[in-house]
Length: 146
Image: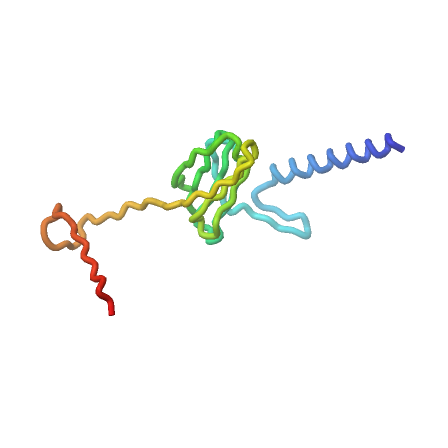
């Protein structure tokens, strides 16, 4: 009886691994009669991915890699930045718009929350301006609000 259970377990594991291998090497488009699929996009990563999350609005993809980095990609697959993380970080999550990154370090048993800000260059070439182009900027605040 024990032999039959072990054989059944081994058979189940082999079937599961075969199914995973089949899914991993599935053609870009296809159907199995009750399900259809098509590949929408694909991109190569510079390191093996351990975990990933996409922002709720779909603008950013955060990928935790085995070389202790979180890679941040935009919708077009362009790398927006790379954040180094500790070797014990094994999982991540993000806030809905991608403004916060949550890391789980299983070695230190610590969770870390990081604020994410994207730096954007604004091209002001040929923009209208008044005064000298290299003049200092003065910000005036009227705080006598009624």
